[in-house]
Image (tube, rainbow over all chains, first blue to last red; front, side, top):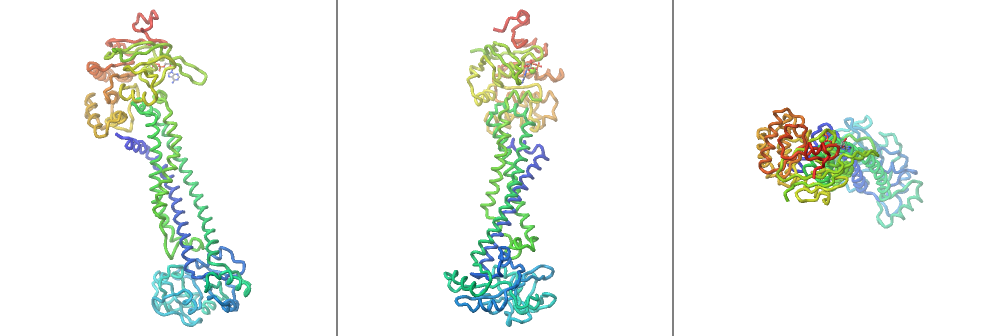
Length: 387
Length: 235
Ligand SMILES: Nc1ncnc2c1ncn2[C@@H]1O[C@H](COP(=O)(O)OP(=O)(O)OP(=O)(O)O)[C@@H](O)[C@H]1O
Ligand SMILES: [Mg+2]
């Protein structure tokens, strides 16, 4: 007989209570890990998309808010009310390269995909795209599409295949080499074709701007503002405001998880207190056999901590499994769509996993302090005389 | 020093809220080393209370207990636990055993608390159970054992660390005469080997065979029936 064996024996003698208490902490930590994993990959994806955008500045319709800035990064539909004439005026400014984008959505095999109307030559030069198969779009009114690498793979499309957009079957002309950004899951149409199919007239959603001299960004913003009455945001500002939103979503989710963990902690307090009542007589016997208060205290505290450790491990496991299972189903939402598609889920690093388990154990040990103290304060006679 | 226990002017008041119950009112007695002593007396007069104080399970309101030369009132909680572990084997009337542990594990528990390493516990527990005739029941749980067998496991456990003193509170109180006889046989042989046996009992037959009888009445202790009648306290 040794202390760990005694603890495990004590812990598992009431199967139902053991399972439900463990389930409580498992769910709490599981939620915590799930939100952490989803939130973490959200943030990673935002940074990656901002990077893949390849622009220093984005010209948006006046009064665009952070939500629309998120949509630029995720490839959601955007209002299209920047005119080609405005595009021409910005393009005419010195010291910058400008490309227009019409951001729309369509579906292939009932799966939503982002559709971008672009000027093929300008865009290829702007992004430095490589063509992996077939050839690039030629004219701006050509009836054809260019596919991102992952979209091609996902829908098993190759040059020669067809994609239906707005009821019109368009031949696949080329497939892009992987870029690591949302371009990989996007269908590109020549701008004029896209404008015709989506009926946006001669409007586009936003202009992506690359400044020749990065130190002159403020000057570039000034010039654009003088030229057109549109909103201008730098990639830094955009990233900051999007990350702020993502951050506050994460904090909210983690608060919810914290409440779940707290509730589980009280479950442990409850279980351990009940155990001290049930085992009152046994505590007396142990004391008569020579157990010190400290031994009794340790016995209960270790049992409680073990709940946290086991619950932490189960919680991390189930949280990660749940994340993997649920992530592909998060769609149609500017925030959550970051998580699906392009990169998949980035698992939290081992430090976070270890931290979650330690956190769980620490919470459980804290929860066990009071019951363990109660158990250790029993006098032997009080415990033995208990009926 | 030939007395294993010496106690002087022991008093014990139980306090429940503002109600004070005097359970012992000044007990002075000695128990010779190696003796077979019975504590008898009417119900509720303080026998169990006395046994708890003699064994360091509880602290007296006043007075002193010396056990094997150690003044218990000078000991802190840890040292007192150590004394209980090494010097005394306790057996109570009911529920001595941890129900979710086997007979062997119950005995091992006492060894564990005395710091005996796990590797040596199993063999020692087996020997002790054989000593009380339960070698073939080592892996049974208390619920699978008769009342008499349970008490024998409790005795085996009490003997775990070779204590010089066995303190038992009506160990045969709820056993039939056959089971009681088995237990008494074990106690006799332990006594023959030199263990001091102190037994609280209601059974006059058992008491008649004791070397020393302590009568507890109304919180006081007397040596003989005549003493009790005359109110002469144990010296
Ligand atoms: N924990 C307690 N709190 C209050 N009073 C108590 C407590 N334990 C015992 N008493 C009281 O102390 C007195 C002596 O009790 P004790 O248990 O020592 O009697 P006893 O001689 O062992 O009786 P029995 O033969 O029934 O076991 C009784 O009046 C009892 O009510
Ligand atoms: Mg009693």
